[in-house]
Image (cartoon, rainbow, N blue to C red):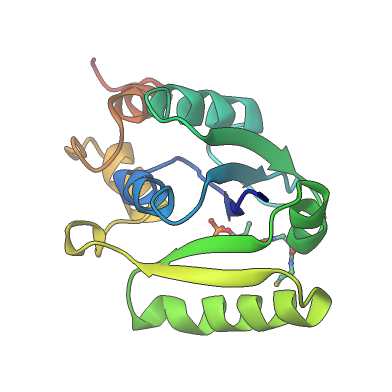
Length: 163
Ligand code: PNS
């Protein structure tokens, strides 16, 4: 029997509790999830790819049927290489829709065998994003619970706040 494999792609700078929740729910739909970080040297990120992989590994250590990978280039090509036939994305609010719609249609235009699947973010995470969390953390705001503990710690280290 062929496995149902989905790619869960993102920048993950850093991974948030909202991402973890989508992964947890995605695992109920798919046999395996490949969580993959886009390696885009042109995009300025707070954490290096290695740091982001490390935070994902620690945050997802208790999950089975998960793989963590990185990719460069087109997402659909990566998906095909990894024998996945779905791309999983979380959607928070209407503001996410335009970007997600455009990306899903472009991916479909590029490869019709790969389906985009969307999960609506749980209400608890509707207002969180990697960017707003980084901004809060930069100025010493309490972001406990919005990110896995390892990310909370790494953000404190990055911004030199007392641990
Ligand atoms: O976490 P993000 O930043 O919303 O993730 C965006 C990501 C990585 C999923 C998207 O930028 C992507 O897939 N980039 C790879 C390039 C690609 O395949 N582009 C074609 C579709 S627009």
